[in-house]
Image 1 (cartoon, rainbow, N blue to C red):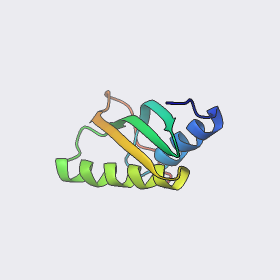
Image 2: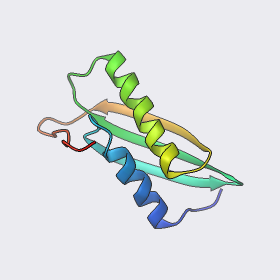
Image 3: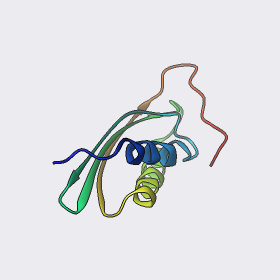
Image 4: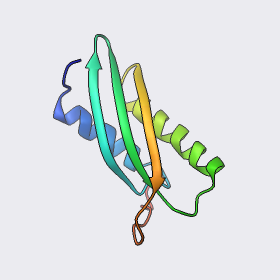
Length: 91
């Protein structure tokens, strides 16, 4: 696997952080593998979210990655955010 440009990683993080409900991208590992990309994200989400709402948010985050990259394979790990972390009002 090959490293990607720093700006591409930043673009992915900006896109995902704009998803309503994503409090933070705690970790973003992105690699190029041939003509495709692999992205592994750890997302901080509000503790009050149901499993259904979390699933919807992960789908939205996946769509955000697709906007930033062509043909990505995505793995995302949502987790309850630490107390006091608030969702952005953008999106």
